[in-house]
Image 1 (cartoon, rainbow, N blue to C red):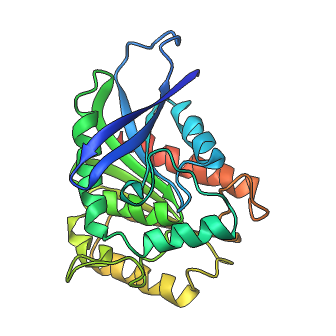
Image 2 (image 1 turned 180 degrees about the horizontal axis):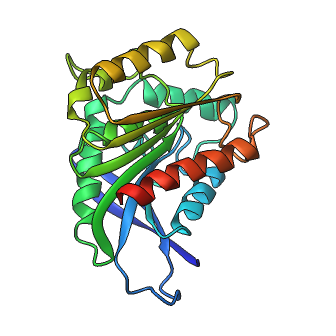
Length: 249
């Protein structure tokens, strides 16, 4: 399926946010068909090459994939950070600055924009890598989100991301109504095994509709420009996520 890509700048309560829109091209034979959408959240580096390619891959399966600039308040529009020490330091500083509730208002603004699009059928999912896995989890708090795939979601188990009392993502489990999928690398040093076990227990106690997948992989096993990239695990991850989206969207 052919894919088209463009960007749109939308207003949010914390400033203008650029969103990148990847969706099936109008040159496809069934281009007039309304389609579901997936909110796709990047790593701390925003829409890099690997993130854009992942978004286009999902779009090629028949979804409109929306990639927001997650730190739009803290960088010029269009910023892409490098996969290097400078980019990592800036991205981590941004992550430690932005309150989690600002992601909620970003999500609300994006969903409200989506509802105005003639090609959107109203069915919405979420997906993300690294901090984007956490932000996809955060998007699952929105009632419109029917299915969410979180790949090696960072900082669910700690307080790195600023939050007000009772607003940490784990404090909001009761607000998640859709299906949830958590995918982890067992060799990921950023989410230790004991912390993963605690999260599993909390999800179970909250009676979430979730599946849990752990692979013999490292952090960033989905990033195709990284030495930790594992193409076999990436293929499995995409397959699992798409199966869930196909069921729900």
